[in-house]
Amino acid sequence: VKALVKAHAQPGLWLEERPVPEIGPDDVLVKIRKTGICGTDIHIYAWDEWAQRTVPVPMVVGHEYAGEIVQVGSNVRNLQIGQRVSGEGHVIGMKSRAARGGRYHLDPETKGIGVNIPGAFAEYLALPAFNVVPLPESVDDELGAILDPLGNAVHTALSFDLVGEDVLITGAGPIGIMAAAIARHVGARHVVITDINPTRLALAGEVADVVPVDVSKEDLHDVKARLGMKEGFDIGLEMSGAPPAFAQMVDHLVMGGKIAMLGIPARPAPVDWTNVVFKMLTIKGIYGREMFETWHKMLAMLESGLDVRKVITHRMSASEFKTGFDIMQGGNSGKIVLDWTT
Ligand code: NAD
Ligand code: ZN
Image (cartoon, helix red, strand yellow):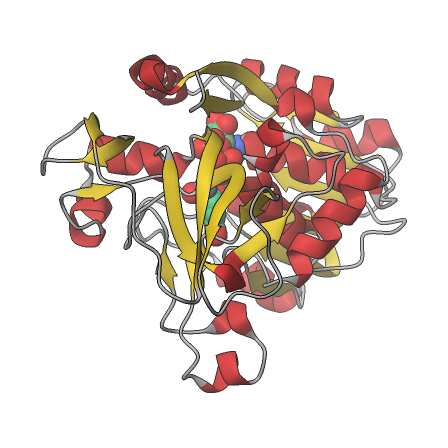
């Protein structure tokens, strides 16, 4: 069966024939229907320093997926063949204090599907039943394939109470855009999203009722004045990984403001801590999704009117993956979904 493999320690990915993965007693086998291309996959494709340090070769990559259960291990009781599912892409151990305490997302032994262990860009994926999340009728396969990044957005956006608050989101990538839709959905007042890429800002405006700001052209002081905001933003969601965006966020938050940080700077960057201290800001780092509270909230919001479908800008067959990766690397797309059934 077909799988997209990091077959050589050099840039690229290779569509190869692979055996169907074998499952253990606590695992399920999922027939993959749709997958999403993530920024992480771009790092692996480009084979940058991080990827070289992290990804074993050869290995099937990919961690954003939706499909159907076709086989269940002998110990698996709560899942059935034929169920449509997505699932958590982090496989945890059960030894650490955090995991045994039920704080699964804080387990230090976490391994990433498609990053450290075989992934989902394939016709079949084997994974622990524990990780599986059944999909409600209303969440179709292509939405199911982007629940991983939507979960990043939900985890970040719900880190602080947004009801009635003014929210600044830096970075209008797919995740920032989805976070903007969530902030709106849960009842923020002003939601401003910044970027330096006009295509991305235009997409943000199509997906969510937000104020897109090109910070290479417009000053946030003027935006605040235009919106009638006297002090600053109450909450910041950092989703660019760009050090200047973080500095700008600190400048434009209120005293006692709160920042949830998802963006990952490409390299260590200096921070002027003076403002963080004098403004008494709270900064919370965000990684992945909370198992499984984020998944619950995300599916519940999708069932109650959260609409992020327009963030998917490209759909293609898995055999056209090269085109998909090229478009992603161009930096002007939203989510790109690969179809493994055609
Ligand atoms: P992306 O690269 O598609 O989007 C980042 C956006 O930030 C781009 O549109 C870029 O133009 C914009 N940007 C650059 N400089 C800016 C500036 N000065 N001000 C405002 N915007 C600026 O990324 P994505 O896939 O949407 O992910 C968002 C971030 O989250 C990335 O840094 C990614 O590495 C990170 N991430 C973290 C986790 C986690 O678990 N912590 C998970 C997924 C992604
Ligand atoms: Zn991802």
